[in-house]
Length: 363
Image (cartoon, rainbow, N blue to C red; front, side, top):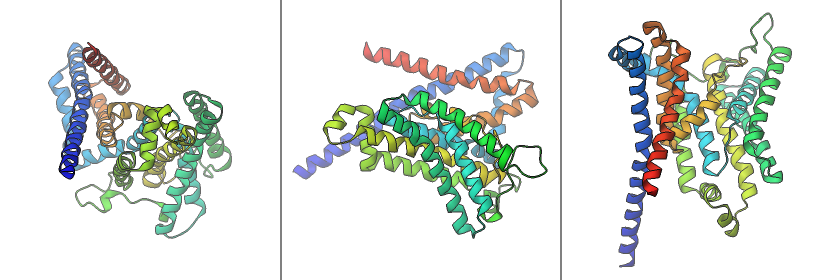
């Protein structure tokens, strides 16, 4: 009888959690719908065909496997940075330093890939490990300052971003710049350090498509992150510190220790975005290679409700928007920058819808 009651209670608990998750998906879906409707209205006001605008969005992202590959390629670094932001946020920390962390990690991966000439089964893991260690170290610094001195992690991570940009610029332009090149970039990494492109493994992808195995690493990271946050003791400690810091302390958990290792873990995951760039695409470190992935990851985490699978879906959406922006510029004459800036409206609509729903629930 007790076992039966326990089973029923577990089923009810799972059903309640599933219901809460489905309800939490409503605001993002509404925000996406309102965003696309708003874009169509703006296009109509400009005197252009809104239906043609929606056709371009669909065919630009899903017309064939090549288009889908470009969307997933754009989404890959956003998965990593979105997960990094979510890990910090679930523990009550706001990591705005993903941009600097991925820059440092990318350079570390490139340095190992340039200086070590080992078989691929050794060199690729070494490069990934170096990137994650570098990102973790860069994230642990603001975590330590937060835990030891109470310095706010937002200010610290922003400052660490500037330090990372300046330091990496110095290294790539004054120390490791490729000889005979005006472009601020390092020499190429060894071929055994390169992550294969999926076109070599998937027959229906064109050889020119840049989608590479780092997308598979991103998908694996989503699954591992979900398991870590949901089913492990460390995930429980992380979530408890984020939701009830005093209760965590009373239960024997040291919030200061959790703060340091969470920021380090967040930096390590953000560093994987640099791995995708260096090992899977350019095969070298290029100065200012990121188009703001670390900052876009904040929007991805927010839209994905800080849920790993939600983050994957949000990253694919932003990857689609980035891919579509260029086609809209060419075919409709809508400036690419204007469309990308309009993505901020997606987050604004999300905040507004959440505020309205929260107000109704309170009343």
